[in-house]
Each structure stands twice: as structure tokens, then as C-alpha cells.
Length: 488
Image (tube, rainbow, N blue to C red; front, side):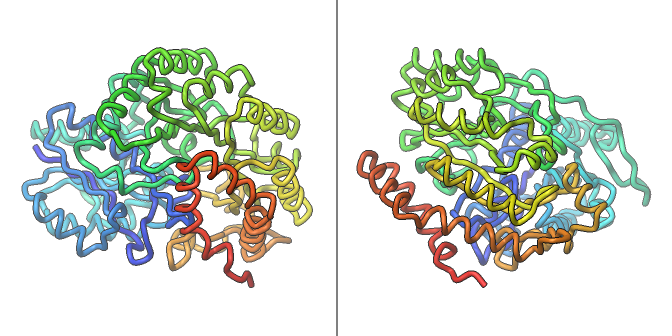
């Protein structure tokens, strides 16, 4: 039986829409994430014996007409379409799913992703042609629906579904989270067989790269973070160290041009003993000489683990620093302190790890003064790269309900990105307008990246490492228009 997985087109005329970003958009740096959630679900179905087809329209990028033509070539007799979604693109995504239902009337059409997980009933009400949405982690939901369709059973009996039946919208109990992650096939193997890895770019990594998850769930309780609150929960479930390193080995053996592995766990370093064991295995197998890697890492990471990671091939860590105001860090339940942040950056420099720091403005308690505190902290920390974004309160998060209940959301879902697909700001705080938040972030990027000290640092890094220079030039080529654009 044929199952078709579709990451649908959106804003193709402006570039590659990165739907799986934590803030989906056509990114200014040219970054395009792999559609990892969709990849893992497709890999699970393929492992279960289904005839799997996969289309990632933004990777080309393809417009709607082009995507439909490709599906028409091998979509005949498809019994199940699985369509990925995001908040900014939700109306476009549902429209595309409607067209699939019109062309393949006997197929079952399911939506997946953070938005329908957070708002399943509202999402189904957008169109009567959509059969169901899968809530939260959907690998086994999709597999079990496919099994039901294959065996002529009722697919709407599967846990984790909110579905339409005789004009009514009903919901089944949640599907249990997957605990044995070693049972999930390698993303890298599916990418090798179904995608072109050269279509994807991560601005902080060496091109080309492969992205993977080594665990799911996040123990932190940050009120803005969308994936733990809508998809995979707060219980950190892990692949075994051997399983992770085996995938590194697969990448090294099957992608001779790939330079780096991007570990996309919300916080790869949550379990120190496991990180150390993975590092030891990478060194033992010599994979630290063949592949670089980077990961998200909270600011409670210690120097000993940083040194082990560096020895194992890690060259960059990505912390969510968010704010220079301790009060705001407390307000958003970040669970970190300014002192921790300062020690973390100092230790990273001792371990010779690069740092890409993430900063965010517009949170509960934000003022012009706290925004400037954030920027001054960024200057003081002086990390290799930095990003500045306004808070995007996505449905399903505490930050969304805080903003919505206070009347701070200015616009609808399609206002989460601008006409050209780049990130927009929908927050309008009592003393800070959307325009002021965006203007601050634009100016912060310029003030950070156009410093003579920073420019000389990048040149020096490029002299020492030509691959770093190549990465920097590629990212700069995408972002330069925004850096030099006059801010109104």
C-alpha cells in the first residue's frame, strides 16, 4: 500500500520555506531545515513494509502547480497522504491538502505538525475535506492509520487522532510517547534514499550537513518553546549511545561529501554520562576525524563535558540565552542565571568550542531598557555568531496564551511571516510596538556583525579554517541585504 508524505509548498517565489524551524520562515541566512519529523514517520512506515513516497516541496523550491505535477506522476492508488503544516502556512497547507483530496478522492488525508497538535479542532474546521489531524509525536499514529487502511479497518480508531466522522469532530486518547527510540530507523538512511542532502543548509554548520535527533523531549520548561509543549513533551527519551554513533558511521560511509552532523535535540547535553559515552565511542571509531558536529546545549553544561565534546569532533554549541535581564529569564521559566551564562561562555572558550548565541525580545516584562541589557550582554559575551528575534508566540505554548489573554497578538496566523516569507512580529505590547521590536532586532544584528572587531575575527577564523570561511560567506551572501538595508 502506498503512503505519500508531503511537505507542501509555501512562498516558493521568495525562496525555501523552512517549515521545521522553531520559527518557520524563509530565513534570512538561507537556512533550510530537513523535515525531520516527517522523515522519521516516513521511515517508520517504510520499515513496516509500506510503499513510501516523499516530497519536500520547499527544498527545490516548488510552487503548488509543480508539486501537484510531481505527485501526479507517482501518486496513483495512494491510500494515505500525510501533509506537514506550520502556523504561518496553515491556511496554505490546508488548501494544498484539500486539492489532494479532490484529486485522490479515495485517499485518507491527514495533517501533522505543531499547529494541528495545539489546535486540532480549529484546524479541522478550516476545511471539511480533511479527514484527520495527528496530535503530538506522530510516527506510530501514521503507521497505525496506514495499517488500518491496508487491512480494511477503521483508521479513525487509532489513538492520537482528532478526526471527522459524519459531520462531527471527535478525538481519541493520546498516543503514548515512543520510549524505545532505537526502534526508529536512521534519518540519514531515509535521506540517502529519498532526498538530496545538498538541498539543505544550516548557517551555523559546514555545508553540506545532515540533521538528526538523538533524543526527544526536553526537561526544561521554557514558556515559549514550541516543540516540547506541542509535540514531544518534557520527558527526555534517548537513543542509546551505540545507536547514535552507528548513525554517525552510516553518514561517514554513505555521504563522502558531508562535513558535519547537526544534532537537533532541544538540549543534547541534558544527560552528562550519555554525552560522555557518545564522545568516547566517536573517538574510539575515529569518527571525530571524519565528521564535525554541533548541538543545542543549555548553559548548565560543564567544562569537562565541553572538552570531551571537543575531542569527539564537536566544534559549536547553541545556547538559548534569550535575555540579559534576570527577571525576564525568571518570567519565561528559563531556569538559568546570568552568572551561569557568563561561566558557560567562558568555559566554551577554554574548551575551544564556538558558540552561536540566541537572543529574544518581547517576553513578559520586556522594556526598552531590558532589550538594551540583552544587547549589552551579547557584546560582553562576544560569541562567534548571534541571532536576535522577537518572540513568536506559537499556539500551544504558555507564551501564546499569555499574549493572547492579554490582547498582545496583533494579527492572524498568516501574519507570523511577511509577504516574502521572512519572520514577522505579531506582538504588540503596551509600551513596545511590533515595529519597535523588529527594528531593535534588525539594528542589533547590524551593531553586532558590522563591528570592526567582529569582522576581523571572522577574517582570522577564515584564514585558519577555509571551511569556516566558506560557511561564513554563504551565510553572509544571504543575510547581507538585511544587514545593509536601511531600517525605517
